[in-house]
Structures are given as C-alpha cells and as structure tokens.
Amino acid sequence: MSVYVEDYLSKKNGEAYRGVSKRFSMKSSWGAEAQLLNYGCIIEKLFIPDPSGNLADIMLGLKGLDEYMASGSNHGSIVGRSANRIKGAKYQINGVEYHAPDNDGGNNLHGGSPSYQNVFWDGKVITEEEANDYIKASGIEGIPAADGEGILFSYTSPDGACGFPGNLDTEVMYCWCKDKTLLMIYRGVSDKDTIFAPTNHSYFNLGGHASGSVENCMMYIVADKTTWKDASNCPSGELKPVEGTIFDFREIDSVKKVLTTDHEQTKVCLGIDQNFCLNDTVTSKKYALAAGIVDPISNRIMEVLTDFPGLHVYAGNHLGGNDQKGTTPYEQYGGICFEAQMYPNAINEPSFESPIIKAGEVKYHACGYRFNA
Image 1 (cartoon, rainbow, N blue to C red):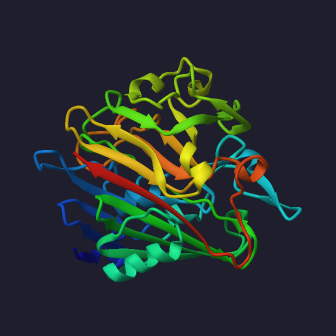
Image 2: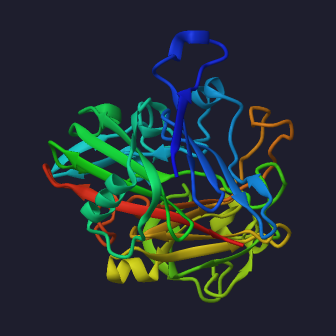
C-alpha cells in the first residue's frame, strides 16, 4: 500500500512550519491506517478495524502541532536518546561523569529537551523492497515482511545535547507488516560511546481514543520478574518475581488490578508505572511476543513484540486537561502505554543489560504492535 505526505501546519504560527512539519499517512492492505508526524516521530492517529470492519482511532493524542510542541506528555512519540529514568540524573561512561537534566524529582526522565520527542526529524517514503532490506539489515530474527511502503525518519542528536556524549545519528523506520503489525525499527550510531535507549510512548485505547478507562481491558505480559522501584519511582537494581503480586500477568487478567494506590509500587505514581523483565527477549535476544491486551467491548486485540529486554507499562495515571484531539477530555487511566525499552536506570545498574553503544557501533532495536479481531 502507498504512503501519502502533506504539510502539517501550526495554527498559532500559521505558515511558520510549512516545508518543515509533515504528516505521513500509511495504509495497510487490510484496512488499517497510521498517521505519523515528523515532529517527534509521533503516531498521531491509528485507525484499526473491529471484527465487523468498523474503524476507530485507538491512539490518544492532542489537537495539533502547537499542543504537541507545548506538551510534555509524549503522546505517540519516540522518546530518547535515553528513555525512562536515570537515577540522580547522572551516570558514568568510561570513568567520565555526565549530568542529564533533573526533570523528575531528582532523576532524569526521557532525556530532557532537546530530545527525540521534541524535535523535527527528516522523513521520507521508502519502497516495500527498501523496507524489507531495512528489516534484513537489522539482523533481528523473527520480524515479518513489510506490507507496502514504509517511512524512514532520521535525526542527529548533537554531542552534548541534554548532557549526553557523542553525535548520535538515529533512524526510525515505520512500516506495516504482512501479519498486521505496525513495526518500528530503531537504528543508532555515534562517534563517541553513549547511551542509545529509545522507546515509543503511545497511549492506546482499543475501544477508541476517547472511549474512557482501560480498566476493563484484559492483559497478559510474558514476564516472570519486574524491576522493583525505590521511593523516587526509579529501579533500585532489585528484580522481584511477579508471582503473588498484582504484577502477575502471566495469565490474562484485568488491567483494573494494577490501577490502585494501595501498593508500595503504585502509590507514588497513582497506578501502574512498572518495567517488566521479558522472559523471551532477555534469553534469546530475538524479536518475540512480550504482551497482549483485549478490549471486551470492541473485541480488538493488540499484541506487543520486541527484542528489547524490558516492557514498561503505564496506564495514563496523570492524563487530563483539554488539549486532547476531539471534544471528549481524556481522564485518568484513559489509555495504556506499552514501552518496549532497556531497563530504566540501566546505565547505573551493572546487573542490567547495558544501554551503551560503542563509538562506531551500529545498533538496531525493534518493536511491533500486532492487531487482530
């Protein structure tokens, strides 16, 4: 299927972003459509059919470019170069201490600004053959073939941005796959040893972006352990079994059980905001099933697949305001994020898989959202 490209203009600044800000509309052969922005590599809209063929936009988002540029919510965006938290907003690489912005109660969260989520990327349409070549070049086993044209975004995060070393050339390739997956592949290479640990921060609601709480959805996560957090909501380095806890989703269970403030891990963050240690990707390093979620009303199903070792699950605990697209304000727990990524604070925890890439090393990661009805 083909990709359509158009200008995506600011309402407040009129023509200021003509030729800079773009929207890419990418359709699949089975009726789904993803609309992406080159600002933050944002998935702006995601139209998915239900079993009867009725399309709904399941991606929470904002009214327009002005709202995306003013917001820190990261709706639909690629975040990094270091996703999630860095304890104390500092770390060492090769014995040199680096300081990232303190933007989360003493910690660093999602890098700061300028980061992937708040800059314009270059974007271009690539052929199905080029998308398949990109999949092959990644060397990640298990990724299915592309279903039509893809989109390749690129951005160079400059040396010293948010305190991170190295000029980090980053690409993100989006395409539909033949198994009904919306795929993204990340590629990073730097001229200095640095952190390369991106993620996608989309808020999903399979009933439709403004259909209310996700509490009645059913979810499973292929993880026996989770990274335990300290009082600042940052992993302490301890891994704890999910067995016997509210975080046990090895068998499908209700999302509602983790939308609580009655647990030490959820109290500080008003609900689930937890990283899971994925069984299969940790051991095999291959692209594998990580999680799934079912909406019992629309009967839409979404699965998450990745080669990342961690999956951070966040249920929109702080959603609110009036900048949302549409007329219905989003409410707490109105969407859920499945952020495939390196473990939070991995740069400071020697027992965690390292997020560091060496100078000149080309690193790939992948995440796919697969749909069924």
